[in-house]
Structures are given as C-alpha cells and as structure tokens.
Length: 88
Image 1 (cartoon, rainbow, N blue to C red):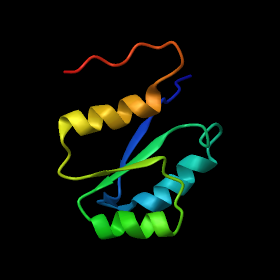
Image 2 (spheres, one colour):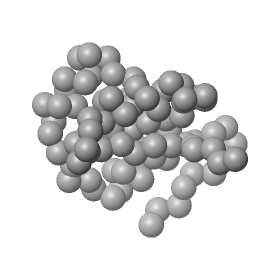
Image 3 (cartoon, rainbow, N blue to C red):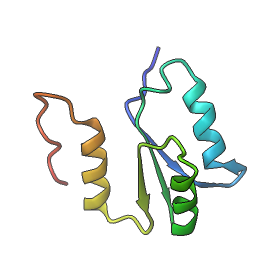
Image 4 (cartoon, rainbow, N blue to C red):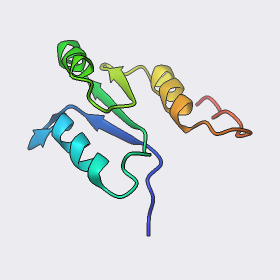
C-alpha cells in the first residue's frame, strides 16, 4: 500500500488533458488531501485553469528553475516541526 505525498502534473499530456487527470486524482480515496501542482509552458493555459478554479494547489511555469521548483515543493510538503529541505 503506497501513499503519495505530492503530485507534479504537466498540463499538456501526450494522451490526455492534465486538468481532466486532476479531477480523476481528486476522486481517488484521499485524493483531496494530496497537494497537486500543475506545470506548463503555456501561461495562458494556467491562467485559464485559475479562472475556472481548478483544484490545483499550485502552478509552476516552464522552463522550470530548479531553485523555484524546490521552493514550491518545500512549501507544500512542509509539516510543523519538520526541517526545511536542504538546497541541492
């Protein structure tokens, strides 16, 4: 039995739509508690999802800067009394 702590989901999938997959993930048991972050090179697509109030916990624009990705992931995984993730 595996649990997921965070999902990084590209909005442009080769065989589907990231927003549709998001809704399927949210319907899984516990899916409403998992942070799901969207990323895309198409800022207009991310803005459209924000306006539609898609249930992503955050958005990351491509090209992804490693330090920015680390910061966003750390924000969503940080627990009380948990040390910060060390920079790479």
